[in-house]
Image 1: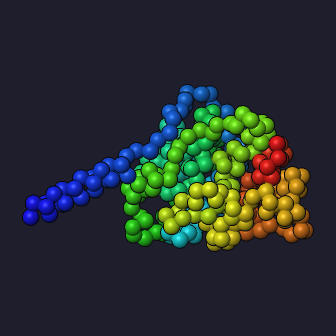
Image 2 (image 1 turned 180 degrees about the vertical axis):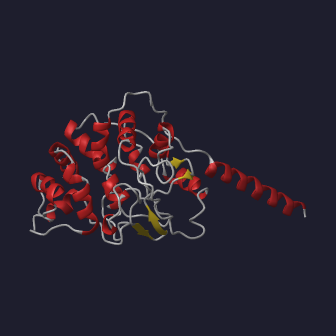
Image 3 (image 1 turned 90 degrees about the vertical axis):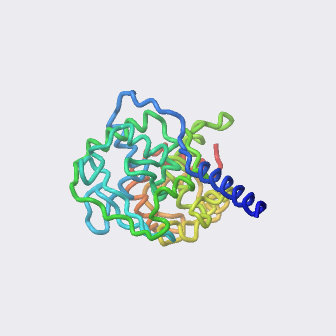
Length: 293
């Protein structure tokens, strides 16, 4: 009996220890939110980060940034929320600090955010970019129509469980340049792994929905969009006929070296995001993906 009680006590202690670890807050470095905002720079960040493509239900004629069509995943269907400054349906009542926490630590006023929202990538953004982006979103026309709720079942609808997911897979931090590489290469790496979040769709996921370590940009048979997201490794791109100029051009107009036109989810990424990037940013992303300095 004594041995049994000792075993029970050990299990309880270990269980409590695991629970404490899995539920502890996951936060990155503190941000300076006193910086002067520039909404014009923020408007570019809206395009750079793919906000319009995800948060606008273009297929059904939805208002810009008022909520996106469903993103079908193995865990259920996620609907990108209304991020216009409407105080009820959107984020009009959010403070800059709350917005920063959502972008940086994946936690909104309602609790932990699902990683279908790519805060794993947005956490790399600079303090100035967060301040500018918030100012730009506060300047768009408010829309009073709320986005549909997520369509996810038990146990994935328990937001508290996301604390455990974050402790396992999320490591919030700011982008750190590789000083051994060029400024263009670093800009491209930042775009691909940061706000452009190419790595999010073009990497395979494990059973818990996290990117498989060491397999970044190797492609995803699902892609989180119901379609295949191909490999973006340099060798794969070269096999498809890409060089720096053609890849940058494809990001501008969707035409591939094989005289095809990219459609579906990638077509939307191009038409609503990368087509608006500067030529320098498109070339930087292409240089990083093709392993060119």
